[in-house]
Length: 180
View 1 (tube, rainbow, N blue to C red):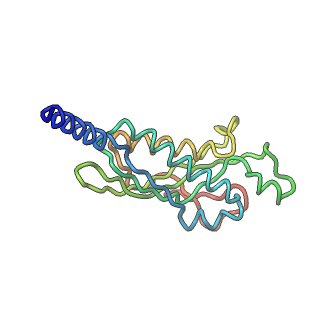
View 2 (cartoon, rainbow, N blue to C red):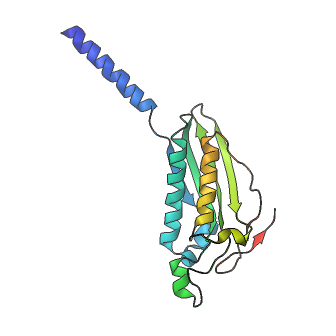
View 3 (tube, rainbow, N blue to C red):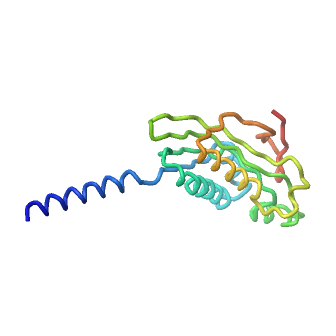
């Protein structure tokens, strides 16, 4: 009987250790000062949705890579393809037919199982308005989230803002771009 109890407790310990080893990586997403400054324009619900969508996309992607144990991100900026409901409510003439180029800028860190922490700097903004025919409000930002999540899951940590980026002093809907 004693032998059975010892074997059972060893089996439970092994199972508990295995469950601990399979624990999902932790993903956190904050909002940077530039995007926080746009919250009154976009609406708090929209910014929270973006933050959650980025976290969900990265969580799903890194579930396939057991080497990643933690991802801490800051959603620095996002630009909608179509006006948000808050913007449409304040500005006559805007509608869901209004269209612009969008995208997102993200920074942060990825920590791997060996304890190495690597910085992340990533941005993607569409530059061709003809690509926006079927876009919803956050199509290009969602596309940026997807590409970043795929890079992280593949073990890549992009560490440079490449391509056009946002101007912090942009207009109401459709912020101007500057080339890098």
